Structure formats: structure tokens, C-alpha cells
Image 1 (cartoon, rainbow, N blue to C red):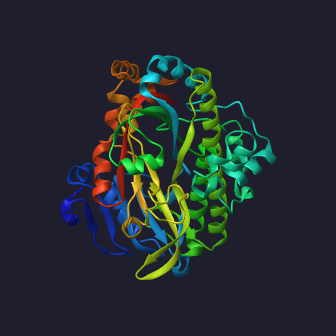
Image 2: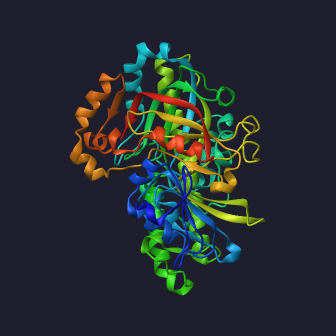
Image 3: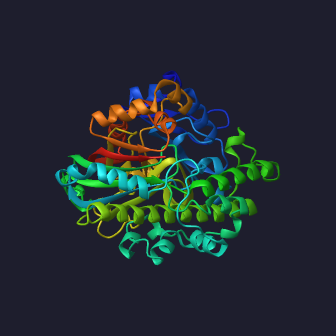
Length: 476
């Protein structure tokens, strides 16, 4: 990215001044090296987002930002319905409510070491993964309606989890306002056999250990200790969410002339929040979010089942479940006025600060746990929302390392079977049904996750709590 087009406000804060049709500035949080790794499409997409009707405050790019579809991945923007604000399918993305949940296990690294191979095999056998992966649960139409309305609560009520789980999920595991009737027959058909499946791409289930603590008090509040073993599950709304995104992107583009919202690019197709298509999309989006929450809940149940067969004394407790690729209705202060905004987070996550009313009582003093996923074979981090980040990014933070090499380039650069051997030599066990999928997720295809979280911390978006090192990774 050409630095001459940016104003540097601090070591990790850069500003693109409004020009031409931009309604607000764009802000990028990144150090010099991370900024240099962002291609010019990040600049182009941020400036396009800033032209959308009803956008307020600014459009923000997280340190892991990279080119995406519509919005850059790692972008946050908020829209005011009282000022003609819009909702954009491209601003949410196709992996609706793709997210991460973090679980403690009650055991430490020494207890796990002699059982790693058995556990890896058991998890791989129990967790359906990969392109077209299907689960053992097939839903009929009324059951799909109930799932799209009930989210993780629907899953818990059927025995796939506990009431305590719901207290550690955004929105208590269920998004209100879902409209299953706005989800097409094709989207439903894609999901009928996919509940309780990981999927492919960058989705995974990983067993990790706490290799380093940065904030003892917050770690204790989250239930983390040095050498403790944890599990992260990264998945979302699978085929249903992708279909919802695809269909509404097309409908929004076709209806743009009548709403006078024709954006600078088809990928930014949008509709007024209060329009018929805007309301329809919101209903479908919330239903797809419930699908993702239910899917991760079922995956948690399957994970607990596999662990119990190998390590019966383990107690897998949910620390937190966070979504990215969302649009949430939130209260924020902009220009000295409290407003109700529709906050799009494309490849970014909420990072609520300490004291926020949206947090569970026992986490409120520490702030929201934020899991920043590393690439396969690299560390991940647990962060906590920072004081003041509501003004800096609408209470948002990064969600991962961010790609620097496309999937096709990765396939041409690395061999999956070789990567599995190399990671095994480092004590990291990979289980996957696709060498191609492993190659696409090669560690060097992503940015340095440590640099990403350091920039997020310096920017005041979130603070580091713990570093997690991988032991077992189940990939699609």
C-alpha cells in the first residue's frame, strides 16, 4: 500500500482523509510492516465503503486486514437508519457468523502428552470436516425452522450442551428477530445434513496449551493458567449462510436503482435498513447466525464426547463464543450523540471493554475474551477488550492473522503431505481429509499473528491475555 496516500496519526494508526464521494474517513490500525503487507485493494475497498449512505464515524481496518469481497476482511463500519443507513450483504460476508469458541479442559499439558495420538484420532473420527462434509444429524423442515429460531439454545434443549454454555455465548446463544421464512429452500437444503460439521477452508478444531500469560488477573477470570490445555472450534453457518449471502447480494444489486443506493461496486450491493429487502435480509441474517451458533454448540457436544472416550476426567467448559461476519444493532456515541447503529464487522469481532453491560457478570470486570486465530501450526492468542475501544473501533478487534498469499498461490507453493510431516516433527499433529486443504492453509500463507495482536494492543483495541500453542489440529 502506498503510504503517501495516508496520514500517520500514531505508530499504529493511519487515516485516509475523505475525498471525492467518501462520507467519512477510513482508519487503518497496523504497524509499518503490516501496512506494507496490505495490497492496494484494501485501500480501494475502504474508500468505497466510506461512500455508502448513512455511514457514520469512520470505516476501520483491523491489523489483519486484507482484500475481501465487498468490504476488506478485517473491516468495521456502522450505519445510522435515521440518516438513510444501509445494510450490505458484502459488508457481512458469505460465512455469516463464522466464529470461534474457546473451551477449557481441566487438564494440563503433561496429562495430555501420552494420549495425544489417541485423542487426535478420536476427534478426527467424531468431527465431520471437509468440503461437503455431512454430519449424523439430518433435520426436516420444522426442525430447521426451530434451529434457525433457537440457535445454541435449541441445541442445548436437545441435550447438546448445558445451560451454563449459553451464558458464555454472545446474545446468550440465540439471536432474536430471526425470520426462517426468509431463508430459501436452496439454503435449507444445503444445511439439512451439515449441522455439527466443521467445513473447510480456514475452519478447524484445535487442541492447544497455554504457553504464556500476559495478564494474570484476566487469565484467572477467563479460567486460563500456564500449561493448561484448551480447545478452540472455528466454524460457522456453513452452506446455509453462504447461500443467504449469495442470494441477497444479487437481490440488493437488482433493487439498487429503485432505492437509489447504487454503490461504487457490485460487491457492495446494499439496501436501506428499513426497506422491504433490508428487513428480509436482516431476518435471514439472524436466522443464519442462529444456525452458526447451533452448529458450534453441536460441535462442542461432539468434542466433549470424543474427549470423554480418551480422557474421562477432563471437564470441557465454555470460556466464550464470539462471532465475526455479523451485523449487530448497537448503541454508540458518535459526535456527542447516542445513536442506534447497525454495525457491520467483516472478518472482525466485538471486543467489549471492561464494565460493558453486554458481558456476563463474572467476565464484566475483565472485558470480553477475544480469540485471535493463528494459521495452522502457529500460535493463537486470547485478548480482552480494552477501555476506550468503543470510540476507536465501535468496540471491535481483529479475529485472525490475515492472509498474505491466496489459496491458489499456496497450493502452488506448498505440498500438504510435506507440511503435515514438518508440523509432526515439531510435535503438532494434523488430521485432515485433504492435502490440498492443508496446503491452502500453510502457516506462511498468513501474516505473523504476534505482530497483529501487538498492533491491536498498541492501538488500544484489545490487550493480550494469553498465548496458545498448538498440539492437535483437525482440518477439513
